[in-house]
Length: 236
Image (cartoon, rainbow, N blue to C red; front, side):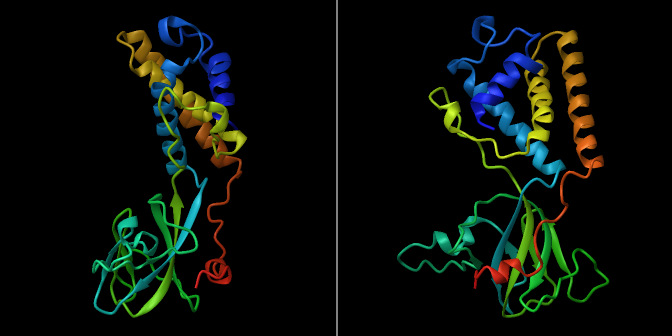
């Protein structure tokens, strides 16, 4: 769906009964873009956190003398300058640059197919996640491992000069209503009266219920990563 289509969905759907837009114009004008797009970006983040909508995978080089690895693009090979700077760029992302889009790490696997236990202190080879984008190997080795993770939706460009007809929302159609409910919740939450706050909370409940219904219908695969796909696709 294009952002322009989602603006129409809001204007003529969830927001139709509310005064919308600059000077209550009833539609989303260019002046409204920064506010509304910020709500959409927040809603996309919330959806991707609660539902397995997008997955990512990277290869990383571990070494015997380093246990902890922070998965940020600072340490990605694709960001290496022309002149060596001494930074250990252990993320091997030449084929597909890493986008700092990790929500949570779901799986770590060796090239031989061994899946490391996660956050299990009883396992000698456990991999800990001290934070959402940090890995700590209990017994690191000189090897390449694959990291599969739940990924964020890219931030939509924002500002009064964007072209909504040229920006895509990369989510399934069955998530559109949930995203709409969340945007209305955020819009109404800025109201100064108790009625607006009450309505805002009602739309947040609608969002939560819609997410739970999507889960119950089994419309999403919890893990779309084949155990050997990252190796088979020639990343190394």
